[in-house]
Length: 218
Image 1 (cartoon, rainbow, N blue to C red):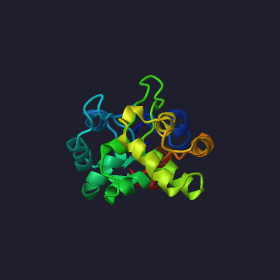
Image 2 (image 1 turned 30 degrees about the horizontal axis):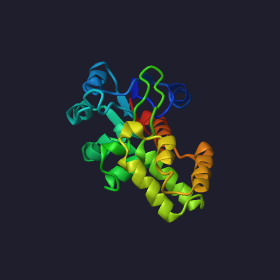
Image 3 (image 1 turned 180 degrees about the vertical axis):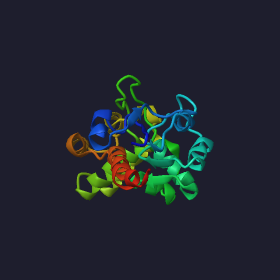
Image 4 (image 1 turned 60 degrees about the vertical axis):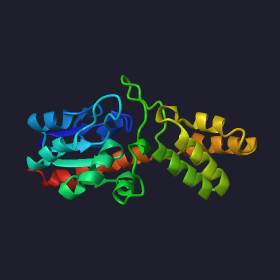
């Protein structure tokens, strides 16, 4: 079977990923990891998670190196969505809602998908802004918050430094701007219905590789 390497971290637990696609799963990619995977024999690379500010991020040139070597490179969810939106014209394949938002220019900043995570467990310790946007949009649609409250909460979330973005912190910051009962209603909503776009897109990428990429790889 062709070698399949997936760079995965907080977007989706590896044990869940393995139930979708059998592959070699590696931690979030840093500078040089994609080129190393190509030189090690990878035929398919799934770039989902990558480092942003902790270490040097995956470079465009190493993805282009992989593509020139005939390696299929699929991006989604986090760093993969960013790089595929930038490099899809060169053959990198983007999957998912977040990729589409970046490729259409509806999102532009790396800050949208940035978060901090436990390097040992891979568990997210903050909430990416792209997930917060989706959750606020759904809560507005469901009538949990008003349009004005939606704008207030989004402004608060956007103004926070990415490691500080948690729903708890956002609600605390909103306490003097939104009625307490509305905050409590919103907290109840997110406890069961918070949207995780990054996880959904990571799953979509793995299914895409399994169903659309692997049958074509010799």
